[in-house]
Length: 335
Ligand SMILES: NC(=O)c1ccc[n+]([C@@H]2O[C@H](COP(=O)([O-])OP(=O)(O)OC[C@H]3O[C@@H](n4cnc5c(N)ncnc54)[C@H](OP(=O)(O)O)[C@@H]3O)[C@@H](O)[C@H]2O)c1
Image 1 (tube, rainbow, N blue to C red):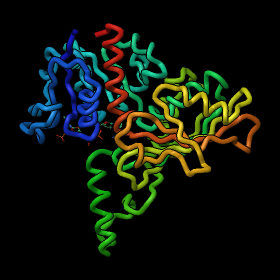
Image 2 (image 1 turned 180 degrees about the horizontal axis):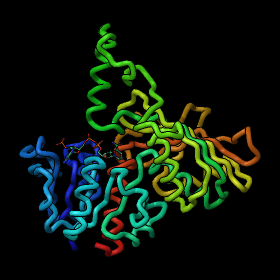
Image 3 (image 1 turned 30 degrees about the vertical axis):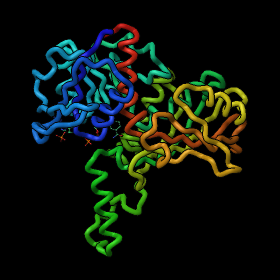
Image 4 (image 1 turned 90 degrees about the horizontal axis):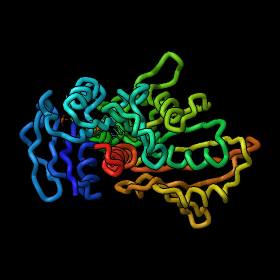
């Protein structure tokens, strides 16, 4: 069997660690792995399967002999180094937002738009975490009922903002629990819900909200689909949740949607309100599938449903999707 040299850029981060786990868990055909991070981490070793591998400082020369480079070290790093990696012959799968809306860069969720991968010119983008989990459910609904409008509210975990955000939640929670509230910043996430992720734009939305709008449109191939999003951060460590209202051209029935989604790869339907069964982020943390529950009729429109969507943002929202793209490159002999 052919094997591949894979570089993980941002290997010491939350997504980088999850990428390493996914490569090992899914038996990706590795010939070798190169772990790259900032100067701060150079010289550390990380466990890859049963082997300790040295972390190296990212440099322009890091990509010699690399077949696939999985990037998750921030947009600035991708902007600077992804073209260098592609020039050196690697296929880049980028987890940051930097290339997602570039016309020449496919934005891929393998269960939804796998064929887009063939258009790559060296760089393939992974969507925003909230988008990746949601399009898995939206795609079959759109194919069957023709979505005409989406209204989405997210409840995003702190791990979506990297390892420093996890540290802040732990620290501020401890400070508030021990009565040191004056040490905690006003917008701390501890015991809070913060309706603000990424920077504000002139239209009153945040960048995170507009990323979801444009990325959903690009992946579904519907550039004019009306989508309205509110993104909030909640004091959950891992796992993003979303309340989703879907309006459709065709009459839509919750029972049919339940069956449709239960037969959709990558989706698990957990929807038995009578026994209080619905997906929650704590249960889906560390899991690959996207959980869908609370599927019900939208009582405010002619054709519409409402549902609840949960996934591990580090897995399907980032690392798993990136590794699935790498697997698709292998399966289609594109690498
Ligand atoms: N967290 C999520 O759910 C999620 C989902 C989708 C996409 N993403 C995107 O993935 C990226 C990483 O997210 P994360 O949550 O893993 O962040 P993180 O935990 O803060 O990790 C950041 C990683 O980037 C490395 N890094 C930072 N600056 C660098 C530089 N100048 N050169 C080389 N490496 C550098 C860090 O290395 P050191 O340890 O050496 O500092 C670390 O490995 C972000 O762009 C984020 O938007 C995250």
